[in-house]
Every structure is written in structure tokens, then in C-alpha cells.
Amino acid sequence: MPDNWTLGASKSAAPARLLAGADGLRPAGEVTERLGRPGRAYAYDASGIRRMIVLDPVTEAVLGPEETSTADQPRYGTKAGDVMAYSAWLR
Image (cartoon, rainbow, N blue to C red):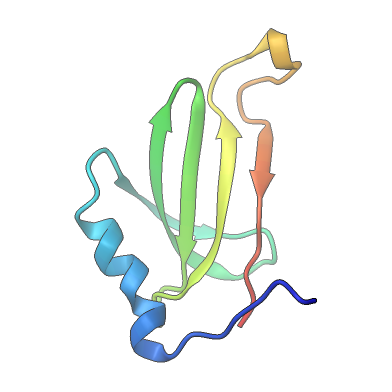
């Protein structure tokens, strides 16, 4: 069974409204996400990990989340800047 769903325009914009009021979340600027699409990112840093969500700059639909190490973590064999996980969402 496919792991996908389709949202209407008003529901697609809802995450942007939710993110605007989230404590600790900050705008991280314009980015190009993993599939090469332009986006607007919001980030939250905690425990050596940057959690970021990328939104379409026009529709505000979620393009995908990403987690990146912000510090070397020898226990896990990662260095600052290593991508820990990401997803690319398609409509």
C-alpha cells in the first residue's frame, strides 16, 4: 500500500501557520531541498541535532523534513554537518 496522501490548498498551508507560533523554531532562510526544489526552511536545534522543515515558498506546502548533526558525535560516528535523515514529499 502506498505511503502517501493529498491535501487541499488550505490544509497544505496549515503547517506554515502552525510553525509560525512554535517556540524555539526559527526561520532558516531560503534553501534548495534534496530534490532541487526551492524552499523556505524553519529550524530547531537541540542536543547536537538541527531539525529542519522545508516549505514551498509559494504554496507553503511541506516539501520535507531533515535532520543534520550540528556537532561531532563520535558515539554515532557522525561529524558536524552530516545529514542524519531526510524525507522528500511530493504532491
